[in-house]
Image 1: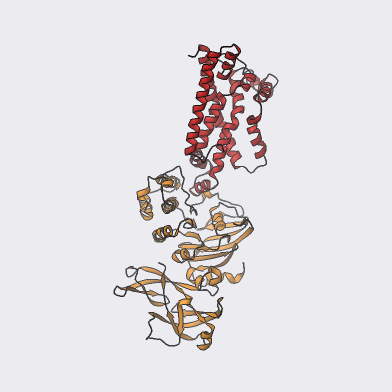
Image 2 (image 1 turned 135 degrees about the vertical axis):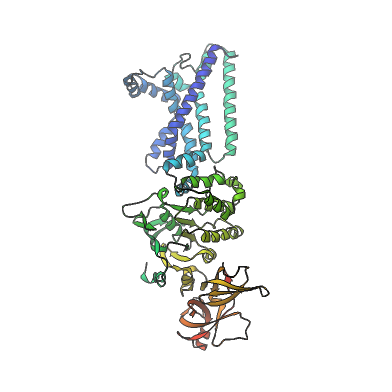
Length: 227
Length: 377
């Protein structure tokens, strides 16, 4: 059913989405925690920057990331000094771009779940001699679990579904940056509608099942997630 | 705070003050208006101290300051000689050896009842014997529900687990913020006996916030009355209740609380005779065995005065008393008479006409007839 190239694209997409989701959980959790708790004036600006990918055309984000990753960009200079070369048109570059692009989809559900906890569970834990780190891992994380699950699903699915940023940053290198969405585009360009149908249809089914599973889960844990 | 509000505590040698709290802070009241808390308290190091006041009087804020959940500036707090807060020191809550029972049962929803208890056991920082664990579970009657999760428990069961959890942290001070307020009357009656057992089983000083007179008379040994963030009265509970301004302080008719010991039971009469510092009383037989400690409340309006001992009356309890003080009650035409009975005090509510008719004056000896005695435990 799938051609060799299709399978390579699917494998690459899953690898990208998994890597990005794991990175986003690591990066997004402290950002979400800070946004959920802070009273600082920076909360607004930081929150807005995190949410930018929700409304920006992916080409805009991709364009600036491309410049930043280029030899004269600040990311490019940093990576060249580290001896990695430039990240544009590499898998690593794609990972970096996807982290930015999917950030709000991970941060916001976690932040909402953490805000929904309120102050009380943390106060209770403090009166039970739990220090700040202890409180975070034994109270906040388990109680915000539905938010983490929603965040993982949305972060993964959104990365699988990206196209514009990939095209700007990654180009179209088989096995390196050619993900499913780009592969479908190629099929259509080449008028291979039958192959495009197979891949596009698979994406439809995949995305539907992801969201179906998520909403079924959220129904049970209605108190967390995107609202 | 005015000076004349304080002396009650000093009239009797109470236990050496173990908790000294001095806080001043502004806080937002329940109706979003700002109040300020300004207290200087010296409380005994054992028994139950009730912090009583209307909502917005600052009682919860006071408790939160003691727990370190609010930071009063300036604030000073020493407990059992240990400084928890001073001008230069502020111990965070998790470093204070206290237990806290919140108004609504605040169990962790992701842990079972047993998981909640173990959360405290692991962090008590003290060698945590299985004996204590068994004792606490037994005391709170929660053995059958240990494997359930909070949403599978009734409100009363949840609060009992929460109290057990606070005990298992092995606190040196137990703070309870209206632990019964979120429960209906039936659930309150379910938990009160556990709190009474708690007082006798554990030698932990308890600070108990409440706006319920019923709970205070049941449980408290010592009473602090807060009004608009200030201490309006403090002292042993019996003394505060017998004060002439008690109606203004606690919002109910004047009364006294006597502690007594059961002497004998007359089952054919359904009565028991108890000995109090103020004299012997016949009360309803509650089934308590002789020797059992019991606590009774006598309302001033249930006490009438006669010049001679009326043996020919149906009134069971009459005590020889002498007049200490006569004051005007807030109720029109009524006077409150404070009387010395034995080594305790009782108040009577009589009409001004009776005061004139009997020519009552301080020092006068007469008889007090007590129509009814409520057993509060």
